[in-house]
Image (cartoon, rainbow, N blue to C red; front, side):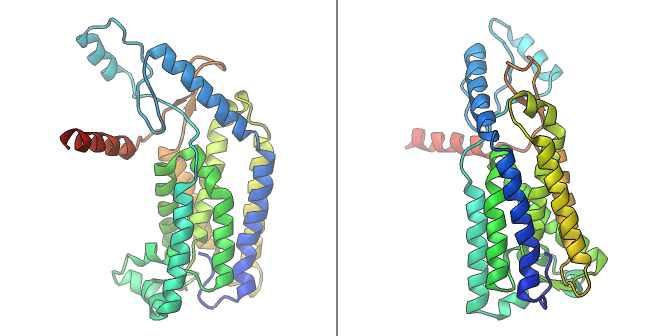
Length: 312
């Protein structure tokens, strides 16, 4: 994911350390996201009282006032208006912690059984021969303890931020797609015939965060989130610095893997990432209307649990 299997430890560490430093600075400058989250939850409460519905994280209740409408009117409104979902900044970092745990377990497995490294690493020749699973499994492997530590540290810094803004489901899909996208671009370019690591997926989170801020900058600033321009500038400098390091003589960092992950993260944010609307003005509720809405697996699971309890 950058580093190939032959990379020296300090080169493995350089890229994620720079990423961690820049992301930490960006997070410090955008501490107002907490205030933004609180304001969003207040707006949701206001909207719930107005429409008579009860919303929770990942719920998909339509923001329509259907009081007194007949069945025919309800069906007409459902057909004529796109489904709307009240936006909520989620709490916790469940999937981020899960990813870190899987990275540690993957590294431990390769220590206990060294052949696993070459059996699961991204190997261009074997991937072209049909072993496509390597595009995903290599994202959970690392070439050494320092490589593992810096990637997990970077993930623990940027992951919770993106997970809170995207929600657990969209964050998980973005992370996985970005890791595979990074390996695909690396495979196409042939810059790293054998490589492992989570850097492509981490750069995907960076790309998705960048696109989220660019797309929703006006709405975020109207809700009190400060320093969006400075954050975008810091993210841009981070990418440029890492590109320069990857192009330096003797570097074995796979820039194509990082670039593929970054672009994959941006594509995910564009396709199904939060697209915030404020149809009722600065004081009204925020609506999340992505281009592609993922199935609400959380709500479906709660329904199934309710059926089981009723059946018992």
